[in-house]
Image 1 (cartoon, rainbow, N blue to C red):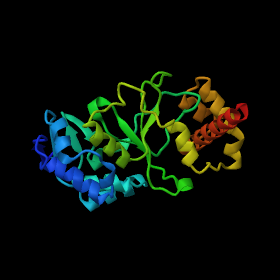
Image 2: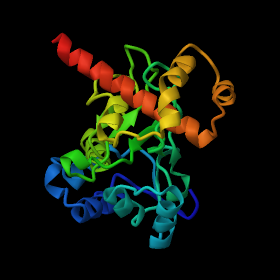
Image 3: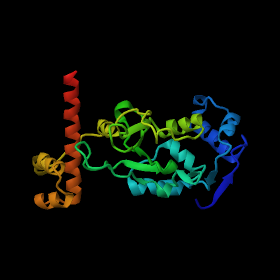
Image 4: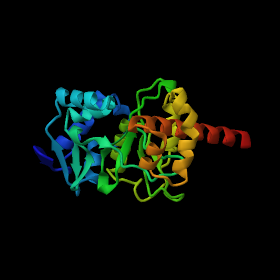
Length: 263
């Protein structure tokens, strides 16, 4: 990380711990932490932490303009204190310029194309952490869930590990900055795919695209490639994404309704 500052975490008055408590105060989360600065310093004294120069308001605004999405305010508050966070050589929080689309899931019946609003914001111990930047208007909150992909197997599924960026950081403080989610699926607050489509306004297709929506989806689920499907139906890439997004949305709605009727 350029312009970074190496820190001694064993000191409860170190710049790192000071920045954490200042961030919690700014984000109104001070009362959610049970550890004291001294207790945290004791736990993390053998770790290596590096802060960076604060991100400017212009850098954050440029990210918003470039991606047409908003970063969570709690992450913006952190970036204004340190543009990223390096721990033991790993980028636990990316600098704002490195926050980019999440690593794509493997094609499956439930996810043929990755939602546009999924972004990776850190990579603790080579375990990417992501958030879904669609706000939850149904619950009137701007918080966005943090999730991991896992190995995409029943034993290690894609799963939400925190209800928000703030919740994720608070979990880290409480655990002494251990990524308990990477080796165990024990932290599971839900399926990020289903949560995305619960949040998302149902896509509206033109009559032409609506007519071929099911056929396109079934071709993809049977193994056809994206380019082949686009050529077959004369779709632009934007139209292809719209159709597949609508197909995924409908499939998940049907599956959800079927599950409710079953019980």
